[in-house]
Length: 426
Image 1 (spheres, rainbow, N blue to C red):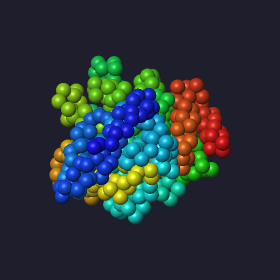
Image 2: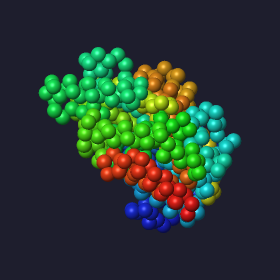
Image 3: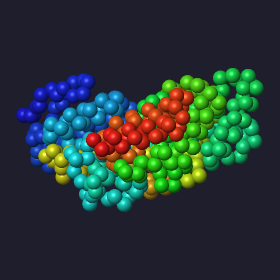
Image 4: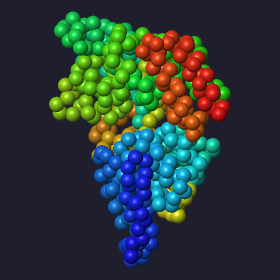
């Protein structure tokens, strides 16, 4: 008889979980199987792929995996996970976690060092997932900031390559914007990005400022480097775009607002995540076949694209850690990455998958992504730990003050640095 657990009140909703530990479901050999529960994505193609792979895993191993859907809202999903972990429940074995959560929940995860083959993954992602010398999670699929550009318009205005630096982006954006407006499109802008006061602005600003600071920013809890000359220059420069090459409303834009302007054909350049590529090439898109992607422009110091993506962590409260490790290894294998890439466009976390001809045929734009993942910059979640959300909010709120013209970059960054030091010292 199946053993059932009660309804759990989690976050802002109710999640009904029925588990299979000792349930009497049979392996191919007729023996009782172990049951695992995986809290994963709630929407999209990944739900279908995960279920298919769980079924395949059960056929191979006899280990049954129940896939539960986390909240659609990332903040609410983190709250769900924290509720489970703070209760030290064994009811969830594997969690799909955001790239910025290892430092916040790492104390509850098993150490995957020596349990997975770390060498097959991009080193930057392994480093991001390592907290207090523990490998908190295995890379699942990746994300990174990209520059989208209208290849047709670059050619029209005499540019042979996308911008390599921020200065080049400004020059190109102004020229293309002026030309398109003269041709009658008064709604056309040079550059759109994520300028609202939220985590997306942290990502954009991290790229701007890190590209100008050789030592980077948020190097450690005691080395923030927010008030360095490069950091101030970068924030001032971004503020100068507003109402000049970027719309006044960019200070309210998140990913979709930026993409809507871009995909309506009203921008020369856009900073966004890889998901926007497939949408832009869909039938009916006004820019289908007219755009391409490039790495985020460099400053005086380096190229810097903010790392995003999702990871798989195993609860230390799981009663089936050995089996959970096997399922995580199965989901993060190069074969599984290849399938997710081809079927859903999910970005591989292992360099060798980018050499696969079938992957590149299905997703030609992945060729550029391999190079980008050697240059990514992580948000300071493993540096800051549990206080990351507070630190991030203190940072992006002051960047937003600069973008909206309420404070100079120098004043805003000084305030941000002082606030962050105070948060960390508590």
